[in-house]
Image (tube, rainbow, N blue to C red):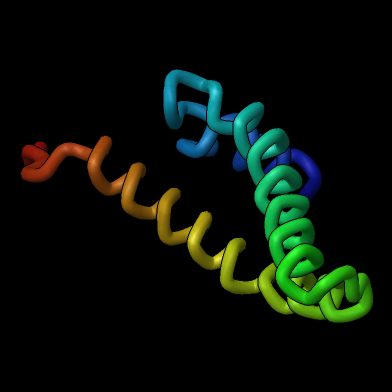
Length: 86
């Protein structure tokens, strides 16, 4: 069971996205996006940190879904369009 999880993690096509930089960019960009959302809402709401936290928390799902859509699009564009049958 653990071996299967390790094999799936090693052979994951996500590791090959953007020349292998995707994993690094994900860890850098996602927190930056949430910080920017928080700061934007904090500024718009005249310093209401509670409102900014609620809206930032509510944006977790849509941002992660957008990232998942982005991954699917990239993996589909990297896959061969007409695979040859052997």
